[in-house]
View (cartoon, rainbow, N blue to C red):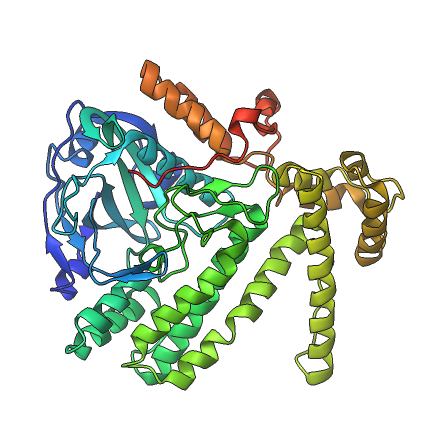
Length: 493
């Protein structure tokens, strides 16, 4: 790996230098060729294993943990920081630079009495979901590898430590700006320095002046809305949307008790610590807006409140536009090009409301009939919208309600000229396979009990091509067994 050190060299005082501690008996559990390509690597080797498990120093790495704060479950924590993640620097790849971080690399000044380790089950889950979301074309951080060990760590009981090697275009979070706005309140220059650095590094098309700051925040609002619209369209619940887990680039970030929906349930909670349902699946759009409001508050020393409010007021429009675009592709709803004038704007809003109602009625029926979200959308690839008979109909109990919905759907789709092409388009955006929690759990159990990572490798390879039929892997697309339905996971890592 070839590193540059822009964050380390240009933002002194925004981190603590700290060196990772090695894990005993390191061994590869998983490796992503596609993530490796991003930083110019090919295949794993013994020397790289020693570097990424902290036995050997990586040439050009500086090793540091960033400081930030954040709102956790609605309450502000003044000082968080990387409690178990240590960044080596920005690895230079064929198309840009990616931060390389050892998640689970040992204690840092921000570990808050913790050991700075990640347990194997959480490290494996982060590795899998990072690459699974990327294959679904969802903005996300990536995972190069997961490294196992025989180092004991204690949570609810004794487990073994592991390291996820995370790649990120940036590790800058909403919580960074909160920290340097509130904790370092007397030093407005640091907040300005952080914003200037963020724009220069990641928004180079913008200027580092008042106009550039406003446009930058507008882009952050839009990218956050886009990320959450992606989540809602694929049925993904993040589970712990604290402001310190929100990427300034709109990338899915810091995975803990995540879950894809199995049976559709609007109020599904995947985090067993979320007793009030703050981060339930259906609450994610509102939480995204709340988090952006907290970021806006932190930016008031350098951006006028009216400009921040104007940008925040665009969030709902961005969210709806992106969501309808994604769901429209999934369900085959035609798009319209509206001229941006008052009359056409009214027509656009009316059409959006009709489409939201049509999609909402469909998901309501899924919930009432306890149907699988991913599999139900995949069925649109079998659908002939020109036919009065729908293959979807057989899945529903309330046939009269479905028939009413289907009639409205047919009117919206209108006549399709090329059915084969239409169905292929649906299959290109509706995955056959997702990372269901029970599949992840089976792979983890095989590692825990037999030291066998073959299920992990098989699952990773499957999810690299989630839209392909893969005839030999059909069982992985089935609804979970009873024990695997709606699993609620722990934040413990």
